[in-house]
Image (cartoon, rainbow, N blue to C red; front, side, top):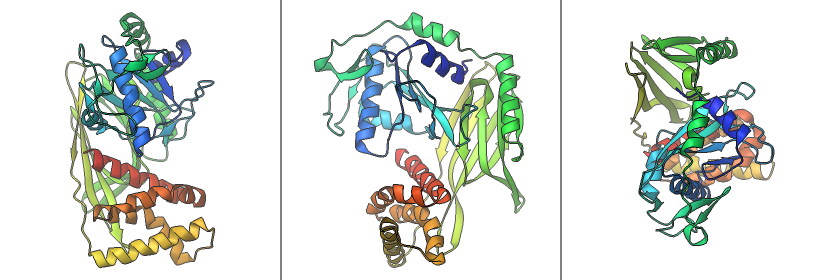
Length: 378
């Protein structure tokens, strides 16, 4: 089994960006330009490596390989995005890899691209400035359109195979990973379980018993063997179910108006551990957005827009307005789910003001976008 943290280190240590490996400081899949560039690189890496995996590492400085990290990114629906835009799409996995020196909420993103062998990948439909039918290849460290490229397909199988072989996990790394997790989360009830005598899952969270059920907040879940962060959320409530071969996560999202909030089921993730030293992750989107009276929403929506305008003008807020500001990201999310399509644009436009005003409000903003991304990709 490959230790993904070690794989990233080996990629960074021994290779400049090339036909099977790319690195980015960050990606932005919330905007068309960022989405288009991401799809271009996926297409190019797949076409240039028809016989082996290729990789994209996200959260690393281009100049000196410094590991800065990015926000935890829920990848469960990213294959849906790739399938929607690419013809002959590769299999794409986005994994969140924790590093000891990074804060809990930051990881390094590892994108693994497994090509659709023997079939050229292209854009199924146009996006941003790239027209439908566009084909991309890697030329050294850049991804370019086929008309400007030699269309090089490289046999990097031996090189990539060697890198993966030198990134295999061992018992020492597994034990170190468990101890690191336990020490880092000592105030959040850390625990672990071994599945099928092979897989080690660690998780932690603030425990709460309610109505005979147990819920967790501030949840962190990692598959230690691969050094992959499976789930992370500062805010949402989570229930966990465990059997001898199953680790199940049911996530709830907090939504409501006027101090009347409820937790709604969002998504269920089930990890099945098998006897042949493999595992399978299945996700099931459960979310049904609550519906509210349009007249009430319209009033609250306009009040929140006025609140953002006060922030932009750097005007002071009353205690009541500060309370409304804390709930603003979730309120805009609710408005969007109730047909206020421009609410998403207004929320994204307020990003810098929310970030500069208060770190907790900015965390609410990021959580709201994470939920929205899950629902949209589904």
